[in-house]
Amino acid sequence: MERATHERERAEAVRLPPLGLEGILALPAGAGAVVAFAHGSGSSRLSPRNARVAAALRAHGLGTLVFDLLTDEEAEDRANVFDIPLLAERLRLATRWLAADARTRGLPVGYFGASTGAAAALVAAASEPEIGAVVSRGGRPDLAGASLPRVRAPTLLIVGGDDPVVLELNREALAELRCEKELVVVPGASHLFEEPGTLEAVTVLASRWLARHLLHEEERP
Image 1: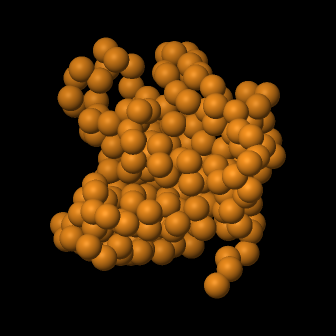
Image 2 (image 1 turned 180 degrees about the horizontal axis):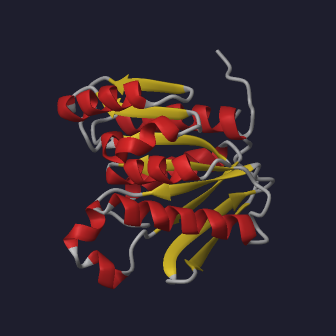
């Protein structure tokens, strides 16, 4: 259920130890859970697409942590943006930080991943049993490899209908998952969901999935 838009939210720039990874932690009033974002290759905490999804999640009472998975120096090495184990470890660091920080301590945690970040989210979720849900947008879950059958968090894979190669890779990954799972195809959407209305479809799907599994809200018709 979408929360009233007049409720105030707090957004703060944060640095995650021990590397000082830069991020933005935003919490709507009375946040009942928090979602950590894992961006894709060539992206950052300033991704406009993730910012739009994050805003939609906050309207549903979910806090968001959008952060850089790599330091500036690390990002200069192109190989690092495809290093799934490294990216997954950074997501685990963020998860531990959320569990310890006074603003988010005790809140259920979910992941939202895009592109290679989706693989990192699934690898991290496979070793973090407390993760309550995962959403992948235009992701490469196939890159999670042997971690896929070990994921226990309910997982939603969202893929564009005009992204045939990635769609097939998501179908193959779906077969490997042993958790509650769903694959949704957004008609007319390419890999980056740049077409009119396609990113809005992502925000609706992601918000419903994460609210249902993290806040235990029942879906409405």
